Length: 79
Image (cartoon, rainbow, N blue to C red):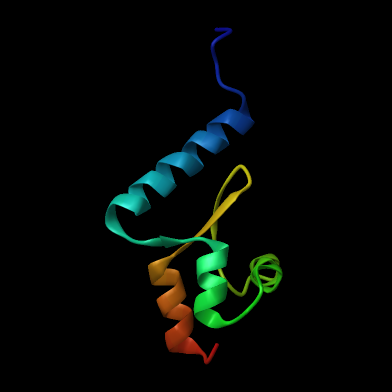
């Protein structure tokens, strides 16, 4: 079937569904919002994501941090 989605499109759709499901049940923060909250630059947040210190959700170039992930990190360590 020539209407089959490519793996990249399927991955993007999965990410979109995850973000939309989270959006209905929990607050999502942009890097700018989280950076202001923690007093760090967005580049620092990007480095922390790369290093595995914080999880994020990506859809294309859009990055969001779930409120529960932010609160987990705040509980576990001083930011």
